[in-house]
Image (tube, rainbow, N blue to C red; front, top):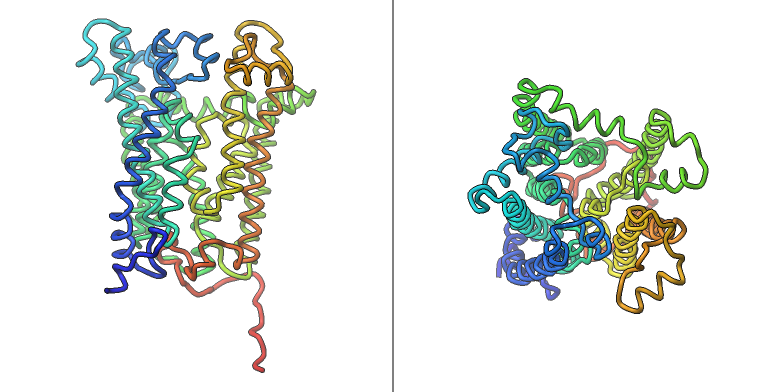
Amino acid sequence: MPESQMIDGAGGVADSPGPAGALMGLRQLLPLLVSTTAAVSVLGYLEKVPCKQVGFDFIPTVRNACYTDIYPLYFGRGLADGKVPYLDKIPEPVEYPVLTGGFMQVAATAARWFGGNDAISRGMWFFNLTAVVLVLCAAVTVLATALVAGGQSRRVGMMVAASPALLLTAYINWDLLAVALSALALAAWARRRPGVAGALLGLAVAAKFYPLVFLGPLFLLCLRTGRWREFGRLLAGTVVAWLVVNVPIALAAWDSWSRFYTFNQERPVDWGSIFFLAERKGLSSVDKVPTLNLMGESGFVILALGIALLVLLAPRRPRLPQVLFLTLAAFLLTNKVWSPQYVLWLLPLAALARPKLPAFLLWQAGEIVYFFGIWWYLMAGAKQHPGVGLSATLSAIFAGHAPAAGISDGVYFIALLARFLTVLLLAVLVVVDILVPRLDAVRADGADDPAGGVLDDAEDRFVLVRRRAPRPA
């Protein structure tokens, strides 16, 4: 059997199979991954049914932990009135990049075809149609992630497809659109098509801004290997694709187009961030938005510099997913906003960076704790009640229902730290794998960097410290 068609016993692709072998392995896994993604997506949709039945009324929604932005923003951003995002005057303009706004407009147009003249019916159709597209985005994410996982394709694909995070957060917002585009960009890079990868990355940035941080890791790894031509093509593709999508809207409606950027710059500290905990514990400087921005940006820059040193000093060049995960984790750990669905940003990269289950499952547990914690905390605020303590919260959970009055600050802070610390732990373990490559599950199989594309098996051209070759015996 040709090497390109060899499949290992774990359902992944054998060592160094090349693109043809990776595709062959993915075909073998396609039924398993697609069916698992579909099953988890259906369960995630069913989790939203109790909220659909009450018209996504806020109190029942947070009590049942089935909140979504999709339905209320259909009414809150003028879509129910036939307004076009960015181009029409709306009291509360769409606060997302233009590709997400375009997605919302297409779904709103289709909802008018199915929902008739009843606004509530159209709103439900808007949610349902959006959910269908998000399921497709989830499937694309799973398959693209498995494609670049090399010999770990089965494990990595299932880690993403069967994750509790996907089940609970898929339909909160439109994040899966950017996640899918980012996964496709990584797959194109792995198949040594940097221009296509750049175009897909530019579209991902036009959907959610976070994929922009991917350029840093790619620059550092291309610096270490001297792959400047490929990085230049990637960067050009990213810039061109982003400009093609954004420039027409920016020229037609500058104020509405720039709303996303001004909104995030002026936004105060929000739930989920470690700065929210600091604010509630008396750090008054966090209340000043310029100071808050400086603290968050400075924290990210410091961590990013540490990651850069790690990439250029590591005894062996780190794998691309490892550096991507560390950079995105640093971005979230220092951000002033950390919404529950942001776990989807990390999910494919975490599985690729460290395809080992114990720490991954611990992280997922931390995300589950936070997922329920934020909704029950908001319920206490909506009811203007201080919420109950840890003992009463656990009693309610063991009895099979939410705490009737929501949870207190202290319980919410436990949930916040559960997520923060498990992400931090996963990042530390990835750093350990980089510093001790024999602990890396991917390289233990004999591979170098299956997702690295031109970086795979590339020689070092630039490192900060040259190591002497061992003396011959």
